[in-house]
Amino acid sequence: MKPDENIYEELFLTENKKSFKGKGKNIFVLGLKIENEKLLSPKEEDILKIKSQYDYILYEGDGSKQKLMKFWREDEPCLLSFTDTVIGVGSIKSLGLNFNEENVHRYNMYMDKNNKFYGKKIIDFEILKSYLTEGKFFGNFKGRKIFFLNGVENFEEIKTALKFQREIKNFIFGSVKKKEMYMDNNISAVVMGSGKSERFGKNKLLERIDGIPMIEILLRKLEELPFKNIFVTYKDKEIFEICRKYKVIPLENKKYFLGQSESIKLGAENIKDENIMFFTGDMPFLKEETIFKIISEFDGRITIPVVSGKRCSPVIFPNRYKEELLSLSGDVGGREIIKKENNLNFIEFFDKKQFMDIDREEDLKAVIKNDGK
Image 1 (tube, rainbow, N blue to C red):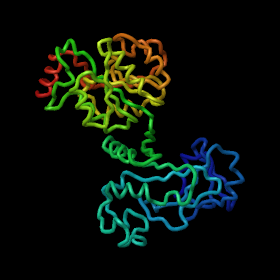
Image 2 (image 1 turned 135 degrees about the horizontal axis):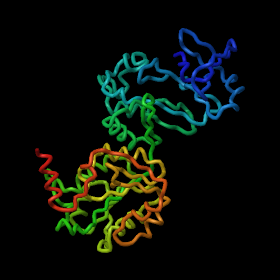
Image 3 (image 1 turned 45 degrees about the vertical axis):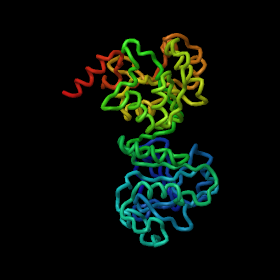
Image 4 (image 1 turned 120 degrees about the horizontal axis):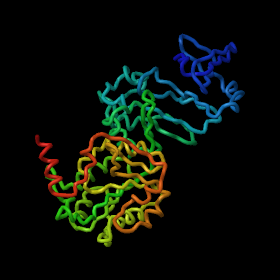
C-alpha cells in the first residue's frame, strides 16, 4: 500500500532516487519504488547506507494481502541481517470470522487434513491462540520476540486479550487505530480484609449481595485482571475459606487490632519488585472496567481515582514506596505518604456508587434498596 503523506516527513525511492515531502514529523519512509499503488521493499544494502541516521528502523517482514491471518511460505518472514527485535502482529477482530480464504491469506494453498483445525468453520479462541504461538512470525530468529494483538477497542475485547496474555509470553495488546497500547504494569493487588467493622457491628465483608459475600464479589473481579499476585489479609476463618476458592494468597493479620497500617505492611512485606494496588474489601460495586482503567493509566506515580473531587480507593503505590509503607503505624493507611507527594496521578470517574464506603449496615441496605427501584 502507498504510504499516507500525512504520516511521513519524507518518502525516498531508491530506484530512481526521488524524494517526496510529507506532512508528518520524524518518520521517514524508504522504498525501492511504488508499483500499482504499492510501496516495494528496498534492498538491504540501501538500508545499511542510511541506518546510522535513525533511532529505529521498522521493516515489514511479510504481508497478508490485508487479511487478518495467513499461512507462511518457507522463505518468510524476510528479516534484515541486523534485526534485533521481531513483532508478530495478530488481530482480535479475526475472532468469529469464517475460517477460509476470505479471511486467511493462502488458506486454500496450505490447509489440508493434517492441520489440527481442518474442518473448523469459524476462527475461535484456540485457533487464534495457535496462530499467535505456533505461527511462523519469527522463522528461525533468535533475538527478542514480541506478540502484539491489535484491534482491542472495548472492554469485552480487553478481557479476551487478557486471557491470551495469561497464556502467551512477551504479549502486549492495544489498538493502532485508537493509538492505545496496554503494557504489563507489573502490579500486585493487596485486598485489606482484616478490618474490625466496628461501625457495622459484624464482619461486613461476609455480608451477602445477591447471595455472595461482599469480599468474594471483589475477588472474582480481581482474578480476571492482570495482577502478578493477589494478596488478601484476613483475621477471620470465613475470609480464609473464601480465599481458598480463588487464585489468591491469604495472609493472616495477627495484629489487625493495631489498625489498617498492619494490613498495608503485611501486603508490602510480601511484594518483591511489583507496584502495589491497595483495595479495601468492602468494594463490591467496583467494576472490572474501572479497575483496568486505573491499572492501564498507572504511569509510575502514586495513582488515585477521584470522584467529584473526592479521592477514593483503590490506590496504586509504585514499588519505591515499599519502605515507607512498611514504616506506617496506626489506622492512617497510606494517607501520610500521599500528603508528602506533590506529583500525583489522578484519574477521574463519575460513578460514586462504585467507590462508596460501606461503613454501616444501613449504608448497604440503602444501596440495595435503591438498586431495586
